[in-house]
Image (tube, rainbow, N blue to C red; front, side, top):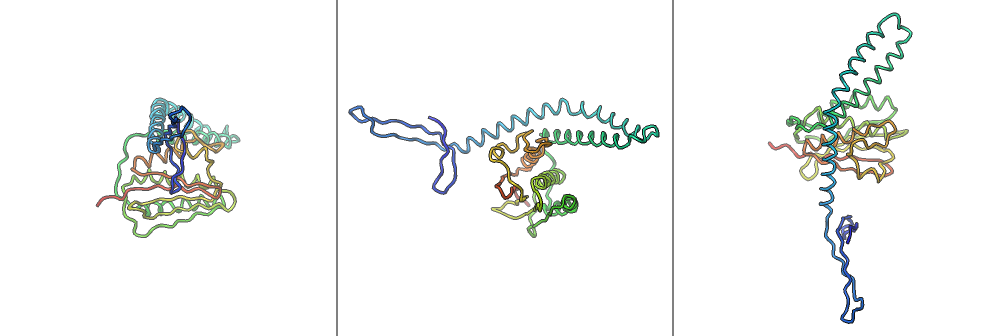
Length: 271
């Protein structure tokens, strides 16, 4: 008895709990092997999601316990660095003060992501046009692309129905995924945002032409502190998964050697 991966007639892979029995004939010799399979694909998905939620619960407990205690002394240190940087005695050290303040700000941003990841309280949602949220972000993302000699474009479905959103959280999700896309691409890097309707849902797709995500990483996407980047915190993608969950949205990923696309499927707001 054990678990196996089977391919169905329509070429889908499913996980089965498989039991093999040896059947003997009346003389005691081996006659045939009987294989009994039970599809446990959904059961495995539920187990993985429960494991992810347990991890998120642990992260939230850690974040609630230490984040504010770390942030308070950092604010004090930053304030004194700003004061010292303005004194004539330290005019030659301004570049060093600037570097220290920037590093404190970077640490503060990591803490902000940490707290966002640990957030369990439901965000207030209201009916919004997803396209409008994307349009307001586009100038910032175009500037990001230009500073890295990369391209950014949008393909927005006209007259998209409203969906229930917390605009601040959706902006954060889009910024995280688009900036990840920029980092994943090399020379002539391209990142696109698309919106469209599919089976009564509004779909937000963010695609890049990078090198793709390793297969051993894809199955664990959304796990805190998992990162393929040398300087990555591993908090950006888990934060996106948390935001999607709070919006009753689902995230799926299609990745290969020529690029990666994140699909976020939102239910249409009832009128």
